[in-house]
Image (cartoon, rainbow, N blue to C red; front, side, top):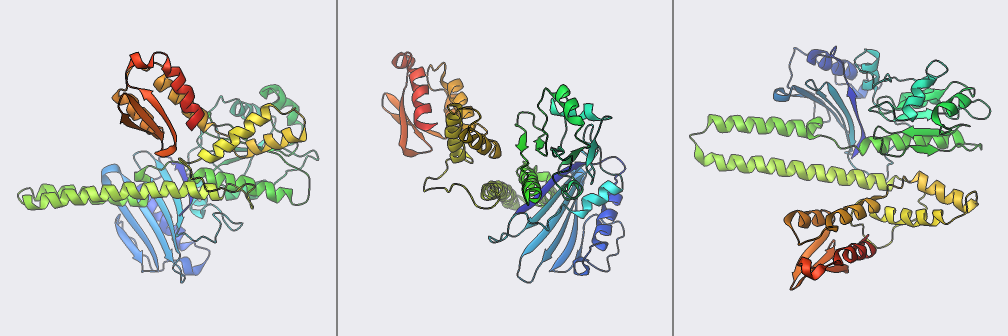
Length: 462
């Protein structure tokens, strides 16, 4: 199970030897002696394994792509396995950091003892991490004051780009910080930037620069690299324990966001090792061209590796989705799933939030019902997935003049299974017999039926 993932832009000061030396220093500097692999003597090797069956540190080089992958693995007495992976791509100068743990149902994804790896601190302290656009990557919060308030305004207004999410913390009405900003920045180093308002005097200035969109009175806004993703607003409420509650919300949101990112295969331990194995198989085939009887076996083995890699990635993404769903609430879920199975990730939540959104539009502003509905929609990041699927259906069928191969594939991608029913086609939604419509085969049959068809599909399926 993936617990943590981050990618960092690394500057040209980092060399392969410096990277390996830093990993070895990280091993030596473990806080707990039983996590240290003793007696390591390195003589410039790029492919080597240290340790034993229960505690090991392995280096694997993929020279074709100029990548060095590292895996630190510890197997505990209860057979729980912890892996720390560091994948450094020297062609792209990107470093991927991942933490894995074998799945256990009774342990939360993130607890109060969790912190991003110390290895990231070492990179920052040694000056290997590039700035993220206009923002440095730090272990400490960035204080926003009169000197750099324009930078924050540009960020809020979408005028600058950045790779890591930005957490902006406003001062409370008492001019205090609503969370432990130093601790938060340390725990989320390499995952997000933490920006802290210096004092309440900035409120008015930010309102001028941002059109009254800035948060205040202890509220927190999280801005994401993808500008199409709505920023997340977390309100601060003055009561006992709120600081820790608010901080937990921020930390959990950032970890969930980090592990939901798509990961290129060559930025994973398994992906690098599979690439090395495939390269060796290619070399073996070239060396043994005269032994044709082995060629089919080599091809089968290569295909098997590729199939297993794809299957593993699919299971990983399914796991991420399930873990995100299970950890979407802070403690006790407000609603529970019934017996209906989701046709795709996020479908049921989007249907529920769509209903709440419709109700919100008909609710008087300023009422308690309005504030609760709006808060739920904001906290659950209503992403309008079904609205996007409706647009895709309209685009696909708006000028229907017969079922082309492209149209068939587009509908299939939306989960619509098409069968031949004589003079018509029958469309079933994800094969469920409860949701179906018929579609004329020829333009003469359909006339203006395409608009009726679109409306019926949306009403029945979306």
